[in-house]
Image (cartoon, rainbow, N blue to C red; front, side, top):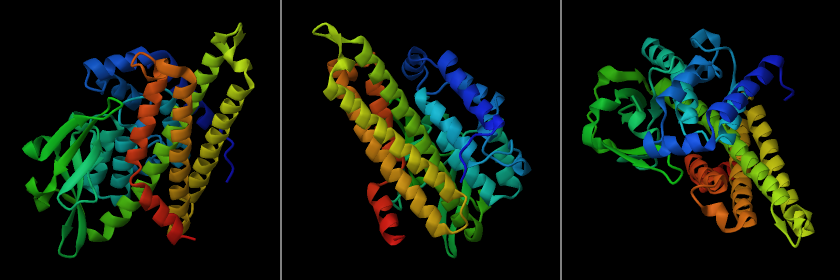
Length: 348
């Protein structure tokens, strides 16, 4: 698969990069976490206006004709800016689920997602009575809820305002909002079913694969930011009259971090190529391998960045600690590590 960017893809990447650099600075992000609950309606409206919420969707469903590569380009640059809004959860996981499900109700809601008017999320978990770690928290407008019926799993679209005490909101370690659902406390009306067992399961599986690749791309951006900040810090910080970057052992540390970053990029490219495969086994293996490398590289780069900075790396006023926290959240959002290992073992 050729990953040379087209002119349109390069323009898309550059537009997100400019926005992150000029309109989403680190201090603005901290203010969003502390004063706006970890979600800026103004920024989200901007994402919609610039077409990012529909960039990875085909024109047939109201998108702008892109695919997984366009989604990854956006996610990587948002990762570099430590953007707190739930792009992968809403514009990828939920949006792709609605796309693959199809039907008038699903596509109508998808249109609202692209326009930035609705924020649905897929709510599912490993426990039958709870859906946990749902990105978005209080800002979610709809929950796409897989529920088991007599003949299989169907998909329902429930308004968030109708859930009441079944929903528990909280904040994650990086300041982003999230929530849990008590599934046994949710009355489900068949009138809000948007897909039956035949369509729901394959749609969710495909959407999850694309969302995991988007999270890996976001993590790649976070790693790149941590690496750049650390490199610049070592160039500026002096000891014994010379920059820290002149010490060979620290240069080797930076080299190891750069290698880990490129390994994660290579695995991401493999996952993007895997998404283009019709064979489900090849797709699952490529996505799982990218997740494994993303987590491994993220932990290494994040920890090394903090160590090379010393105590300042863990202060709330400095960006490196926030990079590490975001990488830990992405690791959790990717799902249990054992699942990725099981997929790789099964697909040998």
